[in-house]
Amino acid sequence: MDRVWLLSALLLAVASGAAQRLGIIATDIGVPAVPGGLTGPDNTALPPGCFCIPINQVCPFQTNVRITLRPVAERCPEMKECCRTNGSTQPPITAPLGSCGRQNALRRSNIIHGAALFGELPWMAMVLDRRGRYVAGGALISSEWVLTAAHRIRSQGNLIARLGELDFSTPQDSPLYPHRDVLVDNIIVHPQFNSQTLANDVALLHLSVPVNTAAAPNIGTVCLPSQGQFFQGLRCVVSGWGGDPTIPGNRFQNTLRVVQVPMVDSFACQQRLGAARLGSNFTLDQTSFVCAGGVEGNDACTGDGGSPLVCQNDSNKSWTVVGLVAWGFGCAQREVPGVYVNVASYANFIRQNVRF
Image (tube, rainbow, N blue to C red; front, side, top):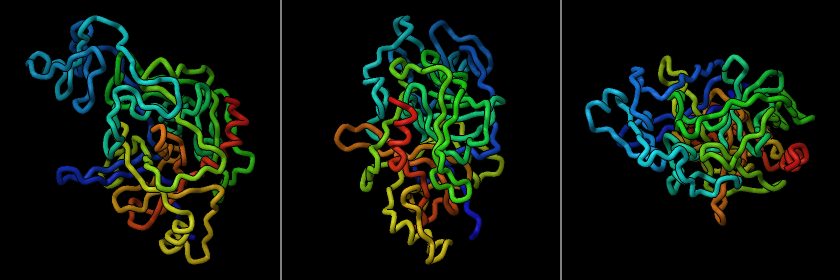
């Protein structure tokens, strides 16, 4: 068998004539320490109640954006300055926080290709080692558990789950709702996990301290599927912070990015993977895997495993974790789907261990 690459998500979307790419961090990428303090990039003190955010983000509720005055431009060069309008310490939250698969009140009506908005994917988790180096992506499925791929973490100890992160380049995406780093105190790997074939590639990470998923718009849970549930025809996305392998020295993107991918029928996926590289005798393990992507420019690529593929329920608009990045060939090639852990096959295993 030719070399099989573990996937990262790669976006190639054409907007205004320019190509954009989305990936998920490669295995050797270390996450830099996040600076703190409500100061501008040049350490200039900001007025009380003000803070800088990236120009493409939205100021939180009960704040106004200030980007036109010269002093503001000097305090937050090439950024926005958000200032509270009434001195309140907690902006109102109108979204139904606390329930699974919900986006926060700042969401747009539809998830689209490109940079994610603050709290748009609140279930997104990043698994780090104690030295801050990237290990895997994952999905928060309860206040105490993160779901990820076993092949990324089964030999790892002393892990940290980072929740609520959006943009690495800022001290905090919102001073009201900072990201959280929580120690992992227990790892449950599926007992039939096969490191050679990646069958049963499921792991559960227990958080040492439960997180309050109803307290902040940027930390929330994704819904779990029913055992054996199918997701053909639904709108699905995969997300991550990974670098663009086509740009020399580009190791990761600061802002969480997202790409839409279509679900692919298992038999069609088997045929396409066989035609791409694995040969006519290849048989896809349909218990362990589902497929998505295969649209040129909008698919997954070399690098990270464990980041979630999620699909939206048509009836209540909640999002369910359908897959975890597992393996594939090449990057965003036409008719070559990416392969993901089939989370619905392990829904009972997950619930038995998580005990919701």
